[in-house]
Length: 334
Image 1 (cartoon, rainbow, N blue to C red):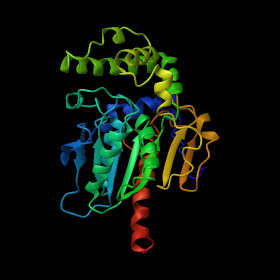
Image 2 (cartoon, rainbow, N blue to C red):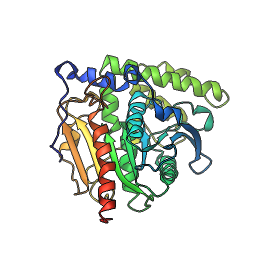
Image 3 (cartoon, helix red, strand yellow):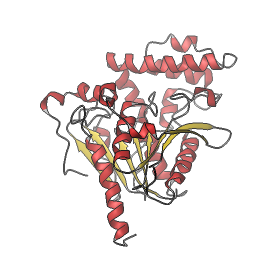
């Protein structure tokens, strides 16, 4: 368990909700973003007719340190502040950046008739595999946030049997280990429930307008909790895959023993004051030597923000990972 160089924000930024809100606050995106200036939208064939939207920012006219693949959380997107801020920082450090949207996230609802589910690992794995091919032989690091962190960890485990060329490290920021517990924590908090239900309702509204012959979400939209909406979604549109939300959530819960055989080096970053991801779930995990679990006292959910215009703790850690590749490659270690 990593304990060195722990995140300690200034006193006025120590609040759980301050950190969580700052993670997504647009105020942190003030100023130029050369990553966006270089960005190209790309639709990836994720297999079985599924298409996922990504944005690729290559380094102009020079070799890069490697490729950072970024994966947002539930109802986030490739344009979420924590994605844009991380991408800008790593791009300025000399990395190429690929920002991937999950199905029905960002501006991608039109690409697939089917709905998004957290269990749809196959398409995300294939999209990440193809995104990593943009590294052109250089090291690739996959970083996922919240639900994206859950996907990133499952991709690392799957890579044990289906290796991804050049994927050299996986970083999970505030990853959801048990989505059922996280859903109930969201529902128990008035602000978080309002925030996520507002975004999910908007997303479902977009999908319904695009495919009015397939979807009528009126009953789902009338529910008053995320859990109830999920139950109704499974009942109406789960196509028999799951009996209820409990069975659905178990489909992408990361149980103890999950990490034991993973070969890709992992860095997992969590905080004790996360209002969505209970840190107790991480304390008794069986980890292997390839996994660095870093537990901070502060950071909220996807936060770890030192200041409005400063790099986050995890951005510096990811930059250090890329620098480590340069050192080991030059020394002939790999």
